[in-house]
Amino acid sequence: MTGSRAEKTPCRVTDLANLKTQGSKVSCRTEFEILTVDFHHQANPFQAVIFLCRYTGEIDGNPYKFRKCYARGCPHNLCPHVSQAVMIANRYLQRDYHRLEQAGIDIDRRLFSLEEMTVKFEGAQEAQDPILSIHDYIHMADEGTEVTVDPTLEWVTAVEHFAHQKTRTMFLMADFAVTCFDQTHHFDRCLACYPEDREQKEKQEKIDIANERLKLLYEEFALSKVRCEERFFSA
Image (cartoon, rainbow, N blue to C red; front, side):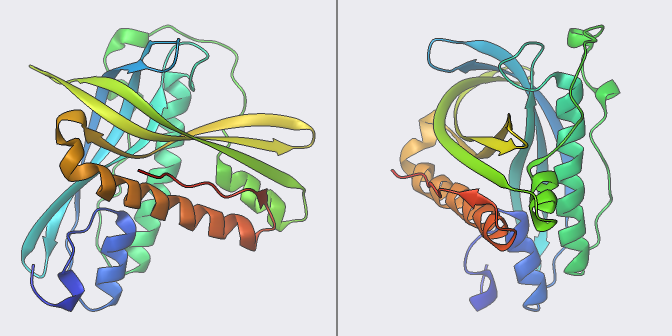
């Protein structure tokens, strides 16, 4: 890409919105991926599905692409149940659609669908808590409720299963322990990831992306008087 507005290839929805408001011509298309992933987390290896959206398009005629993880789900207590993860993913996806539309970028508001998944977890019905997100607690703090957030940042190794191959991937994960009304709930967020065989080329870039996403969230916490000790990834 040429010109001051497009010196860096966009890696986030925020980058697209910023480039559009700065005057670039931006197109955007979405394609969903729902992958089975083997996570190797401390002494608790487990299999889950992750909900990814691949963003592609052109900026001033130059192509770009990146992907974003919206949720992780599994049929046990190590992360949200798959049916919950679909709803969580769609809530964050709709927030991103709103940001793109506010910047003037046309987008087809497609959503993740549980029916598009395999039947792997079919029939796993269980009692579940109401579907809340971190931003529900931000709104509660805006209204005067005391909310405290304790973030834990982790590097999690996983194996992504594609149709005819497996890829070892490093995920930069954040577990947000949100305490409100004397109850604590955990919210899992994937902030960036990269293939392990591209660590030397991509690690620092993905750390920067994860920290920028954390910075935006911490700014929202501060505006809403959510108490939080800010933590960031380092190489």
